[in-house]
Image (tube, rainbow, N blue to C red; front, side, top):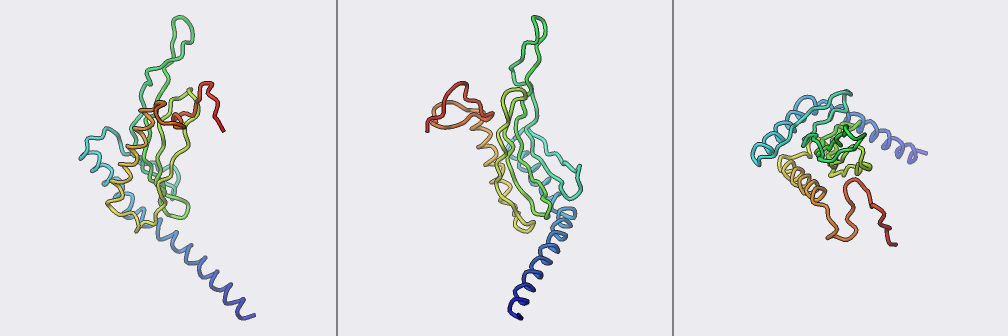
Length: 178
């Protein structure tokens, strides 16, 4: 019986450690990490001439996010409502997101561009999930680099690469071959 209780005690101890880490990670986000993310993204954008904005989303406490967004523009396409009215289709240019998770860890993901009213947006791509101490300065450049690569592939879509899906997941009548 003592062996079973010892095993259970280790599991309870691990659970309590995880709960304590959540509180610590949330405190680190408030005290320093969110500012570090803001500073790193703004610095990188300035150094490489990337037109975008760094925005803080803080609607929910302990679930804040910091986005490097490339903005929203007219797509250049429009829906003809009638002979005299056209409705522009809006294009969201994508974002690199640092999202605080429920447990205080930080998920880094890419939100792909999409055009409203033109198919469904592609699901975000998760780059990684980090404990605050794991999010080192060189990672930010790698994240922005991967973000730019993914966004460029989305923008430069063509049929040169087999099985490459357009960002908004439309096949325009093509059948997938199995």
